[in-house]
Length: 249
Image 1 (cartoon, helix red, strand yellow):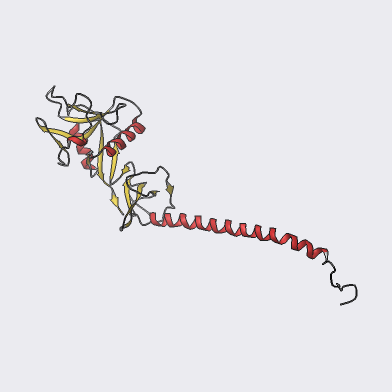
Image 2 (image 1 turned 90 degrees about the horizontal axis):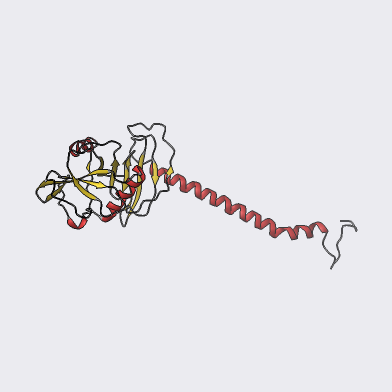
């Protein structure tokens, strides 16, 4: 080292060194932020692929499905996420709608409904586009592996009301449900479930016994969510609602 390069005791460091010293905290901060951003991005990608990986354990009978992750089968989120379609996927349905159900001690299950069916709790529901008598409505449901809807709870009644409101958007329409009078004053559901008066949602003044041929029950869509059942002749043409058990994956 020559005399010009020597730095004596107490002499300030070269300007370049001083500048680097001042920049070091900023360089560290920017680097840390970049690393954090990268880790968050990787985490999101992993989360997405984990969710899609779960979807791909579903039955290979759909060309596309929507995953609806949710903490409880009794609550349905309207946020859906499409997963990549496996190349070899074939089948009769174009979509499979699923609710991610979390059961304590039992891990996670997918509750799945085919395209055109709406999921709620343990069941799938189909709302018709055409109108027909009660017997034909039940036959159509049977042909799809289901039956006219059996309403067991207030929550289920509220769900059906909301779905009717979204699909049909008009007051005064009738939709057949699976309740029918087999003998005078004896109501029975299509699946032979006993009639429960505490889970019945009749309009005021219903069920009526006049005329005597009003043996079938419709939901008469109106503003009152929990008072809209009406007994009618089974021959009138009405819309209809089918119900079947959701497929557990």
